[in-house]
Figure 1: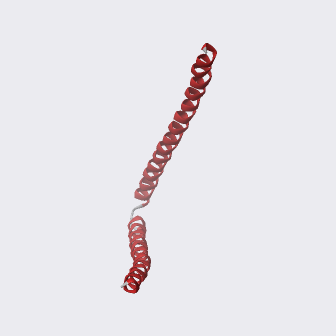
Figure 2 (figure 1 turned 180 degrees about the horizontal axis):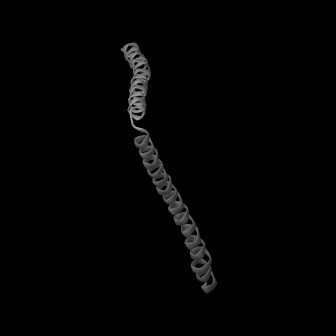
Figure 3 (figure 1 turned 135 degrees about the horizontal axis):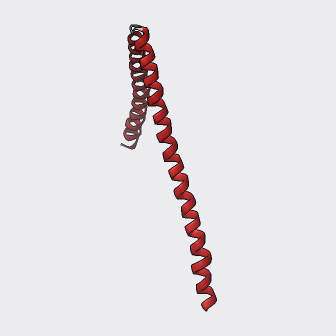
Length: 101
């Protein structure tokens, strides 16, 4: 009975190992196909259309980078504020309680 359970677990693990690369390969193929379609679409544009798409992409990319940097800066600001509040609490509140005793 125990041997059968171990065999089933082994088979399940083997099946999962086989499925993962297949899923990755399917996603990779999909991305390659999508990339090829986008390249073909871009090549079919007029020169003015290409410039317009490039400018739009630069604006979109810049705004994404700006948003990401704002999130990072906000996180750092909150962390610094947390440290300041912690040290103020530690030295002002805790030290006052220690002096009163």
